[in-house]
Length: 245
Length: 245
Image (cartoon, rainbow over all chains, first blue to last red; front, top):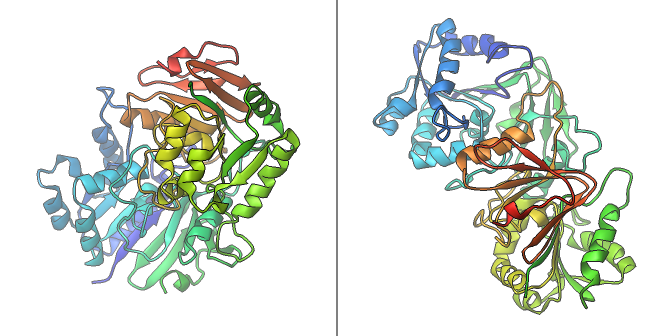
């Protein structure tokens, strides 16, 4: 079986409903399969819940379920499963939503499902991720934009693609502010990790990977970074083989 | 001896020279001491150097030395020291510059100087830090804005103040962008770490700590976050005892 991944930069654009802009890509991605049910992993969703303490996974799952109900797919959360590893092993499809990448990775290790998810994706189980969920498909979490609110067991993640994604890639920078631009941060990354390739995945864009085929979807180019070379722009339709080889 | 720390949000404001805005605060901080020499730790400065590979600590140190020459202090880098731990133990004053917090913390552990610096600060050796250098004075690096370009041995840092600083605290957010605002990130932090106090330290501001006395310096308020309470603004001159107790 070949790998099938849909890696989405962001869930929502201003003025649109949740996941609205990406629904057609998801529908198209799942259409050629006989999948009816998707295991959802909501751990990145760190928010104050009704009790004011625990993250509100139920609220997050409902928001996602509403979208997939319309598309004709059943979404069920791993947080309701008695045996999470078995739930991963039995899943027809796996989906990880956005939020805080550090908390997500912390929980994937804590629930001991990192390896199981990796094995399933390698075996051809379709995977959908957005934002933090796209980041964890990479070898490590080291190109996240998120605040390190908790220390995970390791920075190593699913490692089912051979390059790093920087989701929500941003060209602009608040004026009159001395912090680094996104590009400066990525160049720092390359100074320390010169062998790693990076995709700056702008909002409203998606990477679809099916076996050895990789495509950029959406209405904007992506920005590609490699050590010792200037950044390069690739448009939807361009050949992206350099990412996989 | 009482602790003496000058924790600066940022090195440079647009249109100004390096550390220019904070020179008078540094001069005032060091004035009452008999310090003449400052040990500088440039590890956060991750940049491409002449050889295109190693971080250019020499370039960074020179930039800082120029500023302190004018103030009448000798700055010498730890990177020239044969025995870094002994250099820390012998230092009259210690200073850590800004850059990437993860790389800084990685190196503080790799060079085995984290504990030595902590001990010196607790014993009353004056400490100056900016940006990443302010962040590492906190219990952990968990409120940094930086990209996790390398995995440090631990997220635990100097722990010489009992609260977290978010340097370069930013109120604005790029328009038409779906990533979290700084305040949202900090509220996520509090959801996971409800017992920790956080200062959003805006650019052009400084915290000066001398024993049990803590002051905000600069021309703008700081933003204070505590679990279960709305954010609060404090101005220079306000009583900040709640940070230390």
